[in-house]
Image (cartoon, rainbow, N blue to C red; front, side, top):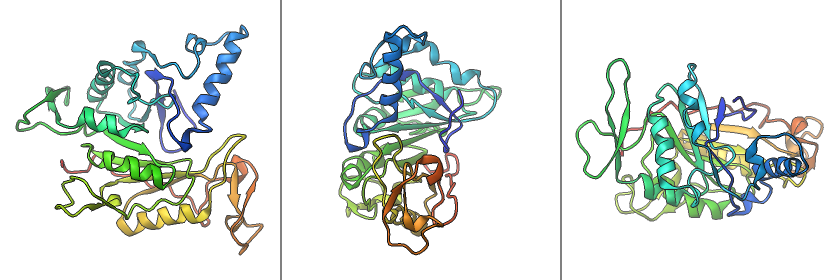
Length: 309
């Protein structure tokens, strides 16, 4: 299935449904899209059976698990654009099935994004991926819990793990769990960005880089996506918030991807208001575009270049 999401090639939804946990969820596009179709389904419109239930109901689709194995062309795959894989109502066994498919599909890069990185950390820490493949079918992996053996890896090299960060509160609550999770690539989705986020703060917890003194959070992040909110109730995003994250990325060599301004654009980012003090005007997502200081920012991390840690 194709997608209009700029930072991925396709979406894969073996799970649908979610529940709101923070300010970034208030105007969730997935809620709005699903529940609009749910209402149409109730009115008798011919739609897939998944829309018979509201979005607050977690639904599992085992028949969709094998979809990536059928795609011959290598893709970046956003896992569960219509759900959170680590929602408490998704059974552990089903999550392991998703990871099993990702392990058996090394031709793809899977992007897993969650607002529940605490559960992700708990599930993935202390587990290793053992390559049971052959030269004809490399990396036919199996997950091992317990003692690591030579050749085992603490992460799947084709799986990127991320968490959503809409403001400093979310960063303070979630980033530490992401940094504690073994991953080939760790990323943040700062969309919708609703406030200033400083990733140069010191996180006090056990981490291989901190030597007992804490770690600057951005040093453990491999990619940052930033975007403003879209939709009828969208909240504006200040250009200072975006520029601050871009500057932090540039200082620490972290790839930066600017997805969109959303419905609102600051005057100082518009040709029609050059030099104007920063305020925002609602002109719609398409007109607002995705230029930051006159250019697109489309940086990606190298695929799975992180050393095991």
